[in-house]
Length: 156
Image 1 (cartoon, rainbow, N blue to C red):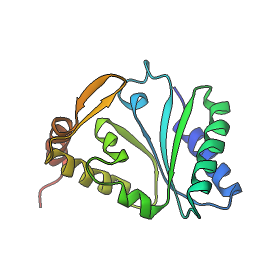
Image 2: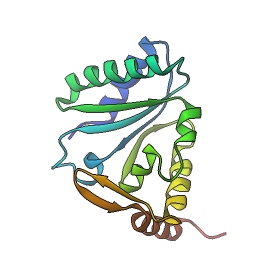
Image 3: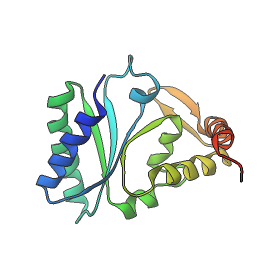
Image 4: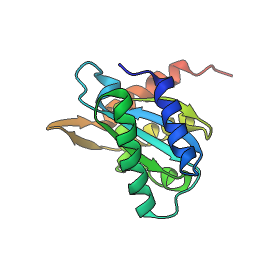
């Protein structure tokens, strides 16, 4: 297990050193839904700005290497700016995998609400995804999560 506080501290320090402000951090993938079996840690990091795709890739690689030293596990980091993050909040996009499970470590931009809306949209589709040879019915998972969210929301 890794400490969310330690990961967040390392990420913020790394990105600040590169002149970028961290606006949000999400853990997703197998580490969330099966931590004892997970071989790596998948993270989404939203920063204030990205100049181009080259900078994005460079930040992803360097941050992954840096964080791996701390957590002693392979780390896969996906960096977005707020605009590209919002663009990927659609069924069928890379972020659709968040329906399988996620944990928000840091949020300055309303991630919880945005992800819940993505899950609601997925629940209205017939989306499947293959992860390591397993077929996941994202629509069914999203429907169950949407139903659970409705029971957690106070009625006015």
